[in-house]
Image 1: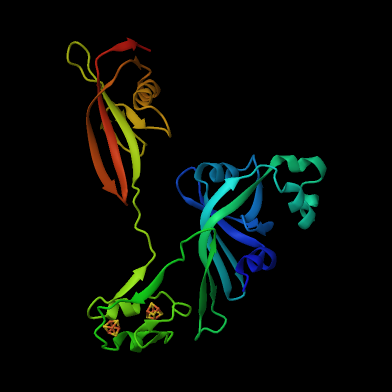
Image 2: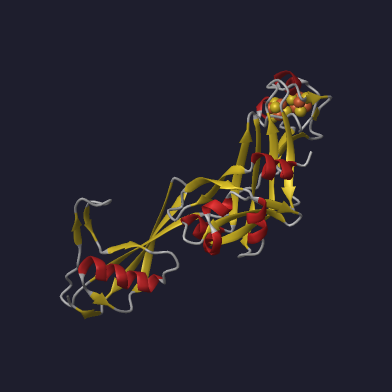
Length: 292
Ligand code: SF4
Ligand code: SF4
Protein backbone atom coordinates (compact mmCIF):
# COMPACT_ATOMS: atom_id res chain seq x y z
CA UNK A 1 0.00 0.00 0.00
CA UNK A 2 1.30 3.50 -0.83
CA UNK A 3 0.68 5.10 2.57
CA UNK A 4 2.13 8.50 1.64
CA UNK A 5 -0.16 8.76 -1.40
CA UNK A 6 -3.17 7.83 0.75
CA UNK A 7 -2.21 10.37 3.38
CA UNK A 8 -1.69 13.27 0.96
CA UNK A 9 -4.41 12.59 -1.58
CA UNK A 10 -7.08 10.73 0.35
CA UNK A 11 -6.87 12.22 3.82
CA UNK A 12 -5.23 15.50 2.72
CA UNK A 13 -6.17 17.58 5.85
CA UNK A 14 -4.23 16.52 8.92
CA UNK A 15 -3.72 17.72 12.46
CA UNK A 16 -0.19 19.09 12.73
CA UNK A 17 1.56 19.80 16.03
CA UNK A 18 4.43 22.06 17.01
CA UNK A 19 5.47 23.71 20.29
CA UNK A 20 4.33 27.29 20.85
CA UNK A 21 6.41 30.17 22.24
CA UNK A 22 5.42 29.17 25.80
CA UNK A 23 6.82 25.68 25.32
CA UNK A 24 3.36 24.09 25.09
CA UNK A 25 2.07 21.78 22.35
CA UNK A 26 -0.24 23.37 19.81
CA UNK A 27 -2.12 21.80 16.89
CA UNK A 28 -3.88 23.05 13.79
CA UNK A 29 -5.36 21.56 10.63
CA UNK A 30 -2.95 21.67 7.71
CA UNK A 31 -3.48 20.48 4.13
CA UNK A 32 -0.84 18.23 2.64
CA UNK A 33 -0.43 19.56 -0.88
CA UNK A 34 2.03 17.38 -2.73
CA UNK A 35 4.48 14.53 -2.27
CA UNK A 36 7.44 13.11 -4.13
CA UNK A 37 10.54 11.12 -3.23
CA UNK A 38 11.93 14.14 -1.36
CA UNK A 39 9.01 14.29 1.07
CA UNK A 40 5.58 15.78 1.73
CA UNK A 41 4.86 19.45 1.01
CA UNK A 42 2.61 21.88 2.85
CA UNK A 43 2.55 25.64 3.15
CA UNK A 44 1.82 28.49 5.48
CA UNK A 45 1.92 32.29 5.50
CA UNK A 46 4.99 33.98 6.91
CA UNK A 47 2.82 36.11 9.22
CA UNK A 48 1.50 33.13 11.20
CA UNK A 49 2.87 31.94 14.52
CA UNK A 50 2.89 28.46 12.95
CA UNK A 51 5.49 29.72 10.48
CA UNK A 52 7.75 30.92 13.29
CA UNK A 53 7.38 27.60 15.10
CA UNK A 54 8.37 25.71 11.96
CA UNK A 55 11.40 27.96 11.47
CA UNK A 56 12.45 27.64 15.13
CA UNK A 57 11.89 23.94 15.64
CA UNK A 58 12.26 22.49 12.13
CA UNK A 59 10.18 19.57 13.39
CA UNK A 60 6.49 18.59 13.33
CA UNK A 61 4.18 15.78 14.29
CA UNK A 62 1.03 15.02 12.32
CA UNK A 63 -1.99 12.75 12.47
CA UNK A 64 -4.48 12.07 9.69
CA UNK A 65 -7.72 10.23 10.34
CA UNK A 66 -10.34 8.64 8.13
CA UNK A 67 -12.93 6.44 9.79
CA UNK A 68 -11.01 3.99 11.94
CA UNK A 69 -7.79 4.36 9.96
CA UNK A 70 -5.12 6.76 11.15
CA UNK A 71 -1.72 7.84 9.91
CA UNK A 72 0.89 9.47 12.09
CA UNK A 73 4.26 10.91 11.18
CA UNK A 74 6.90 12.89 13.07
CA UNK A 75 9.98 14.37 11.55
CA UNK A 76 12.12 17.16 10.21
CA UNK A 77 10.82 20.01 8.05
CA UNK A 78 12.61 22.65 6.01
CA UNK A 79 11.51 25.85 4.36
CA UNK A 80 11.90 25.68 0.57
CA UNK A 81 10.51 29.17 -0.05
CA UNK A 82 8.35 29.54 -3.16
CA UNK A 83 9.76 26.40 -4.75
CA UNK A 84 6.79 24.19 -5.78
CA UNK A 85 4.29 26.96 -4.93
CA UNK A 86 2.90 27.13 -8.49
CA UNK A 87 2.73 23.35 -8.70
CA UNK A 88 0.81 23.28 -5.41
CA UNK A 89 -1.70 25.86 -6.65
CA UNK A 90 -2.11 23.97 -9.91
CA UNK A 91 -2.87 20.70 -8.14
CA UNK A 92 -4.91 22.17 -5.28
CA UNK A 93 -7.07 24.67 -7.17
CA UNK A 94 -9.07 25.73 -4.09
CA UNK A 95 -5.91 27.53 -2.94
CA UNK A 96 -6.42 30.03 -5.75
CA UNK A 97 -9.58 31.25 -4.01
CA UNK A 98 -7.93 31.53 -0.60
CA UNK A 99 -4.86 33.34 -1.95
CA UNK A 100 -5.91 34.86 -5.33
CA UNK A 101 -3.37 36.07 -7.85
CA UNK A 102 -0.26 37.68 -6.35
CA UNK A 103 -1.31 37.24 -2.70
CA UNK A 104 0.25 33.78 -2.73
CA UNK A 105 3.56 35.57 -2.32
CA UNK A 106 2.81 35.69 1.43
CA UNK A 107 3.26 31.90 1.53
CA UNK A 108 6.31 29.70 1.99
CA UNK A 109 6.40 26.00 1.22
CA UNK A 110 7.74 23.51 3.75
CA UNK A 111 8.93 19.98 3.08
CA UNK A 112 8.65 17.14 5.58
CA UNK A 113 11.81 15.46 4.36
CA UNK A 114 12.79 12.94 7.05
CA UNK A 115 10.09 11.30 9.12
CA UNK A 116 8.80 8.09 10.60
CA UNK A 117 5.45 7.01 11.91
CA UNK A 118 2.79 4.45 11.30
CA UNK A 119 -0.42 3.39 9.66
CA UNK A 120 -2.96 2.13 12.20
CA UNK A 121 -6.25 0.47 11.25
CA UNK A 122 -8.85 -0.61 13.81
CA UNK A 123 -11.70 -1.14 11.34
CA UNK A 124 -11.82 -4.73 12.59
CA UNK A 125 -11.21 -4.21 16.33
CA UNK A 126 -10.36 -7.84 16.99
CA UNK A 127 -7.68 -7.79 14.30
CA UNK A 128 -5.97 -4.42 14.24
CA UNK A 129 -3.37 -3.68 11.59
CA UNK A 130 -0.34 -1.44 11.88
CA UNK A 131 2.59 -0.77 9.60
CA UNK A 132 5.56 1.55 9.76
CA UNK A 133 5.70 4.58 7.43
CA UNK A 134 8.97 6.35 6.70
CA UNK A 135 10.21 9.25 4.60
CA UNK A 136 13.97 9.07 4.00
CA UNK A 137 14.44 7.69 7.52
CA UNK A 138 16.01 4.53 8.88
CA UNK A 139 13.80 4.61 11.96
CA UNK A 140 11.00 2.09 11.78
CA UNK A 141 9.07 2.98 14.89
CA UNK A 142 8.59 1.19 18.16
CA UNK A 143 7.80 -2.51 18.49
CA UNK A 144 7.62 -5.27 21.09
CA UNK A 145 9.87 -8.29 20.71
CA UNK A 146 10.66 -11.48 22.60
CA UNK A 147 14.34 -12.06 23.34
CA UNK A 148 16.26 -15.26 23.94
CA UNK A 149 15.72 -14.94 27.69
CA UNK A 150 12.31 -16.54 27.10
CA UNK A 151 11.65 -19.67 29.20
CA UNK A 152 8.58 -20.70 27.18
CA UNK A 153 6.02 -20.30 29.96
CA UNK A 154 3.27 -19.22 27.53
CA UNK A 155 1.89 -16.47 29.78
CA UNK A 156 2.32 -13.71 27.17
CA UNK A 157 0.32 -15.62 24.54
CA UNK A 158 -2.57 -16.03 26.96
CA UNK A 159 -2.74 -12.39 28.03
CA UNK A 160 -2.31 -10.76 24.59
CA UNK A 161 -5.62 -9.03 23.71
CA UNK A 162 -4.95 -9.30 19.98
CA UNK A 163 -3.71 -12.91 20.08
CA UNK A 164 -0.72 -11.81 18.06
CA UNK A 165 1.94 -13.90 19.83
CA UNK A 166 2.56 -17.31 18.29
CA UNK A 167 5.44 -19.63 19.16
CA UNK A 168 7.13 -16.85 21.12
CA UNK A 169 7.12 -14.47 18.16
CA UNK A 170 5.14 -11.21 18.19
CA UNK A 171 3.38 -10.26 14.96
CA UNK A 172 4.25 -6.54 15.04
CA UNK A 173 1.66 -5.76 12.37
CA UNK A 174 -1.10 -6.69 14.82
CA UNK A 175 0.40 -5.59 18.12
CA UNK A 176 -1.54 -2.91 20.05
CA UNK A 177 1.54 -1.79 22.06
CA UNK A 178 -0.49 -2.38 25.22
CA UNK A 179 2.50 -3.72 27.17
CA UNK A 180 0.53 -6.52 28.89
CA UNK A 181 3.00 -9.18 27.72
CA UNK A 182 5.96 -7.21 29.04
CA UNK A 183 4.30 -6.82 32.44
CA UNK A 184 3.40 -10.48 32.85
CA UNK A 185 6.67 -12.01 31.62
CA UNK A 186 8.37 -13.60 34.67
CA UNK A 187 11.91 -13.25 33.28
CA UNK A 188 11.81 -9.83 31.51
CA UNK A 189 12.25 -11.54 28.16
CA UNK A 190 10.10 -8.98 26.32
CA UNK A 191 11.52 -5.64 25.23
CA UNK A 192 9.97 -2.48 23.79
CA UNK A 193 12.40 -1.42 21.08
CA UNK A 194 12.83 1.75 19.11
CA UNK A 195 11.79 4.24 21.79
CA UNK A 196 14.60 6.69 22.35
CA UNK A 197 15.24 7.97 25.82
CA UNK A 198 15.08 11.75 26.03
CA UNK A 199 18.55 13.22 26.44
CA UNK A 200 17.67 16.88 26.76
CA UNK A 201 16.56 18.61 29.91
CA UNK A 202 14.12 21.52 30.24
CA UNK A 203 15.61 24.45 32.09
CA UNK A 204 14.01 27.65 33.39
CA UNK A 205 16.63 30.30 34.08
CA UNK A 206 16.01 33.13 36.51
CA UNK A 207 18.20 35.65 38.26
CA UNK A 208 18.28 37.57 41.52
CA UNK A 209 20.56 40.41 42.56
CA UNK A 210 21.69 41.53 46.01
CA UNK A 211 22.43 45.24 46.09
CA UNK A 212 24.20 46.56 49.20
CA UNK A 213 25.22 50.13 49.97
CA UNK A 214 28.41 51.18 51.79
CA UNK A 215 26.57 51.16 55.12
CA UNK A 216 25.56 47.53 54.72
CA UNK A 217 21.93 48.21 53.80
CA UNK A 218 20.53 45.58 51.46
CA UNK A 219 17.81 46.37 48.94
CA UNK A 220 14.79 44.05 49.00
CA UNK A 221 11.32 44.09 47.54
CA UNK A 222 8.08 43.20 49.27
CA UNK A 223 6.11 41.55 46.49
CA UNK A 224 2.33 41.42 46.65
CA UNK A 225 -0.14 40.05 44.10
CA UNK A 226 2.65 38.36 42.14
CA UNK A 227 3.51 34.73 41.34
CA UNK A 228 5.71 35.02 44.44
CA UNK A 229 4.54 36.97 47.47
CA UNK A 230 6.95 38.21 50.15
CA UNK A 231 10.41 39.67 50.66
CA UNK A 232 12.85 39.03 47.84
CA UNK A 233 15.81 40.49 45.98
CA UNK A 234 15.07 42.06 42.58
CA UNK A 235 15.24 39.62 39.69
CA UNK A 236 13.17 37.65 37.21
CA UNK A 237 13.26 35.38 34.20
CA UNK A 238 16.09 35.37 31.70
CA UNK A 239 14.66 35.80 28.21
CA UNK A 240 15.43 33.48 25.30
CA UNK A 241 19.02 33.98 24.03
CA UNK A 242 19.60 36.81 26.52
CA UNK A 243 23.12 37.20 27.97
CA UNK A 244 22.98 36.51 31.72
CA UNK A 245 24.65 39.78 32.70
CA UNK A 246 22.33 41.82 30.45
CA UNK A 247 19.32 40.03 31.91
CA UNK A 248 20.40 40.96 35.43
CA UNK A 249 20.90 44.63 34.53
CA UNK A 250 17.51 44.69 32.79
CA UNK A 251 15.65 43.06 35.67
CA UNK A 252 17.12 45.39 38.29
CA UNK A 253 16.20 48.38 36.12
CA UNK A 254 12.66 47.08 35.55
CA UNK A 255 12.03 46.23 39.17
CA UNK A 256 13.79 49.06 41.02
CA UNK A 257 14.62 51.77 38.50
CA UNK A 258 18.31 51.44 39.43
CA UNK A 259 20.98 51.18 36.75
CA UNK A 260 23.75 48.77 37.73
CA UNK A 261 26.86 47.54 35.98
CA UNK A 262 29.09 44.48 36.14
CA UNK A 263 27.01 42.22 38.37
CA UNK A 264 28.97 39.10 39.19
CA UNK A 265 27.83 35.59 39.94
CA UNK A 266 28.15 34.51 43.54
CA UNK A 267 26.09 31.34 43.50
CA UNK A 268 23.07 29.53 42.19
CA UNK A 269 20.00 27.87 43.55
CA UNK A 270 18.51 24.87 41.77
CA UNK A 271 15.33 22.82 42.14
CA UNK A 272 13.41 20.44 39.91
CA UNK A 273 9.65 20.66 39.57
CA UNK A 274 7.51 18.77 37.03
CA UNK A 275 10.74 17.66 35.24
CA UNK A 276 11.89 21.27 34.76
CA UNK A 277 15.22 22.36 36.21
CA UNK A 278 14.63 25.76 37.79
CA UNK A 279 17.89 27.62 38.26
CA UNK A 280 18.28 31.00 39.91
CA UNK A 281 21.61 32.71 39.22
CA UNK A 282 22.39 34.76 42.29
CA UNK A 283 24.42 37.91 41.70
CA UNK A 284 26.06 40.36 44.07
CA UNK A 285 26.28 43.96 42.96
CA UNK A 286 28.26 46.80 44.57
CA UNK A 287 28.32 49.37 41.77
CA UNK A 288 25.19 51.43 41.23
CA UNK A 289 25.65 53.66 38.22
CA UNK A 290 22.48 55.65 38.49
CA UNK A 291 19.71 56.11 41.00
CA UNK A 292 16.25 56.64 39.56
S1 SF4 B 1 5.91 -14.63 29.13
FE1 SF4 B 1 8.11 -14.34 28.81
S2 SF4 B 1 9.01 -16.27 29.28
FE2 SF4 B 1 6.84 -16.64 29.04
S3 SF4 B 1 6.63 -17.24 26.88
FE3 SF4 B 1 6.31 -15.06 26.98
S4 SF4 B 1 8.32 -14.18 26.61
FE4 SF4 B 1 8.64 -16.31 27.11
S1 SF4 C 1 2.11 -5.43 23.54
FE1 SF4 C 1 -0.02 -6.13 23.90
S2 SF4 C 1 -0.82 -6.49 21.85
FE2 SF4 C 1 1.41 -6.38 21.65
S3 SF4 C 1 2.11 -8.47 21.78
FE3 SF4 C 1 2.19 -7.63 23.85
S4 SF4 C 1 0.23 -8.16 24.77
FE4 SF4 C 1 0.02 -8.44 22.56
